[in-house]
Image (cartoon, rainbow, N blue to C red; front, side, top):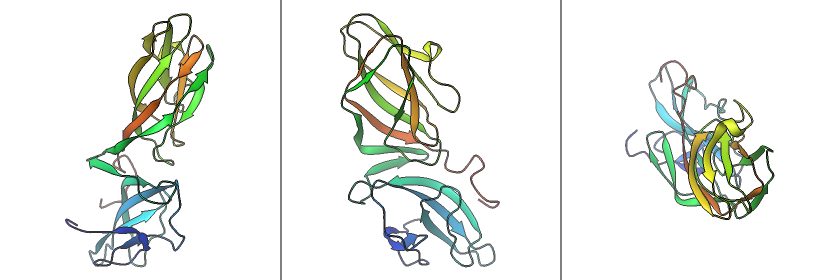
Length: 210
């Protein structure tokens, strides 16, 4: 499929046509679309399909084999958010804002949603700034599917009255969330998501043959 061009704006039609959506529903704003390589095991035809489902796209007639190979995101105007892909690594051309200023309480884990694909687990990477007003603090995060973040997940020590920055790199749950924790009250300052890693169906997400 080298050199193939497909468009999210069109409903699926076989190559060389460019449409790839699995339903006639218009492209949604602020949505995740999963991209599949599909095949007809009898004819050997191969094509590209997009769907809002990460596991059960509506397959075109005759196509019976699929593998998810990535995900794309739309913005508030239903346009694709620009990214670069390097294998299973997806990086935003422009890092996406997660929050401008968000307070957290001492010893209380909070779930924060990242601007990444919703519906699958990915390994996200984000630039996070934190500050605490009066005492040194430990800040950490975890995959909510494994545990709610505690001091045992601490990844960074933050000095009092210092704006500190760290790159967090870890797995989210399928709702695109991390669990954050700090042992002193403070704030998350302007922070940005840089992108994510997606196994792309290599861990049980594909049918036999892909």
